[in-house]
Image 1 (cartoon, rainbow, N blue to C red):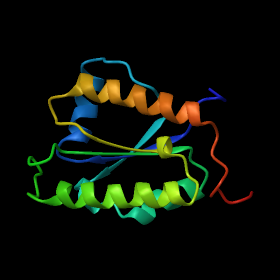
Image 2: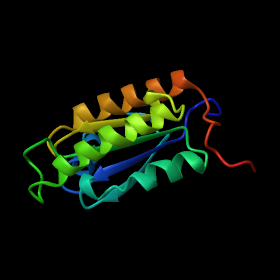
Image 3: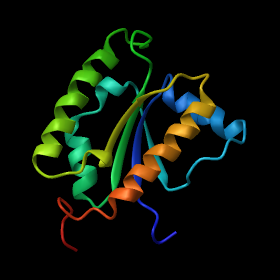
Length: 138
């Protein structure tokens, strides 16, 4: 477990969190090193949360929400998509590997897809290695 990356996941309450719950109740295996924060909507994830997570020593951040057009709040994931594109480019500009910040769209009925994406995210972050660029010294 020592070599496993620490990943923080911001999951939309209405879709992605429900998809994670479905994966769990269906006993679909996915990596255990992902810690989840349930948010009302992916559009409510402030880019500062991503930077703060990396600064605090996490190796990767994953944001997942409803499919485009299926947002419980109608336009939240449109805002999220735009915001994620900008923050990912900004982080890459300052030297953060693009594999460290991942975005996905998972609905409540896609438990298996959630588990598959969790595996892909973990492998990409693991491949990037431990993150030290923005992390504060302890």
